[in-house]
Length: 112
Length: 114
Image (cartoon, rainbow over all chains, first blue to last red):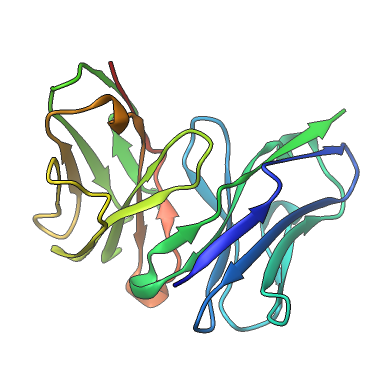
């Protein structure tokens, strides 16, 4: 069965600093992996996805993620944090029938 | 190109009442999913449709919950005899046939059961 673990329920970085949000997955088959962002009281917006093409995936808003099979990881990074990046970020893996299995989320806090 | 829409955005009800939520997917998306999200948690899968057929239901979906997609377009999720534990955000997502792995989410319906 697939599962997702996000390390750190809260991550705090200074504006302009590197953002690193961690995601580890387990899957018995080559996975589809996703990062979504959720702003307060809103739905989920797709940031990027991995579908077995390039291992380094570029997404919207300057985010990217690297698929590392040996580490079963799909960490999300952004070189320079902006105040508008403050939100909750969810990692997900696609299970059978493409339903998504989600991590618990990481709230990103940006310090001015 | 409009996105997924959900109605209402917020619903407050008293315990024991029935509520119904509507989801309009992106046009021509054949798959439609319902998820539930409680505060501080990731979403949990409830059910999904391919066209009008409901193909899978989670064990989370008790007998009080029912979902329909009668013409393969919009979907409704009904909760009968609501309980306080039903308070959550209910999210709808849709995906196209050509990219079934990619789900696009609506803004959600936040339910509060008093």
